[in-house]
Length: 242
Image (cartoon, rainbow, N blue to C red; front, side, top):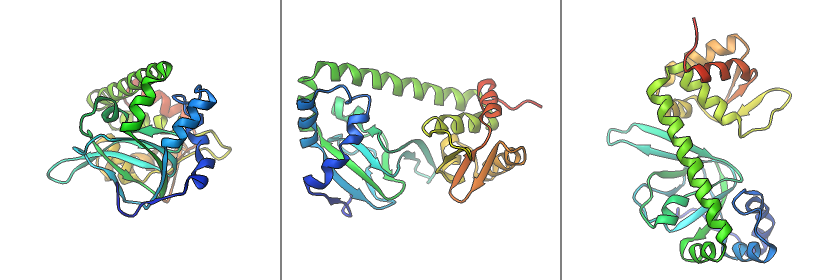
């Protein structure tokens, strides 16, 4: 964990436990079990750019995002980066290494100022064993992650730039509720280029083409989806027609 974190007193963290309660993994826990889980959850605040863990680190904690965004990424020796996922409020990460006891498979970095809950593996595993239904929910979560990863691999192999970009935008907007002005995605063009494996210049050109058709609107540090229909068609076909 980064040195610039601050651990809050328990009374300050209690009000944020509702984030955990709303997660599909934990929402069916009875009151006593959830209270026990809450005693394990340590609240921390992080500055943007802080490293939560690095690839190869011991998988000794499960982490939930209270506010802000966490970037899950990998990098190559020559400095290239690939974003695997963006974790937002109410989501958890780090469950694979926590469950199998192996090393972390990617880097986790605070993509903005954020707050997180950290649950130590030494306390979490006995808790899961005491809650059989919880173990089944984690199996379902891991299956969801696997399907999502398979979709990503398929997109990289089979889709061209418009298909990859449209798929990424649709996937990201599914996490946001529709608003009157569209669905805003807090992501930079550099970040989305690292997510789909294309240059920032190519991403910018494609987004501007879609902006001219009023499918998206480009804002500083964000992309607003105005018309998801055409993007869904492109994502479904894997390419943009003539």
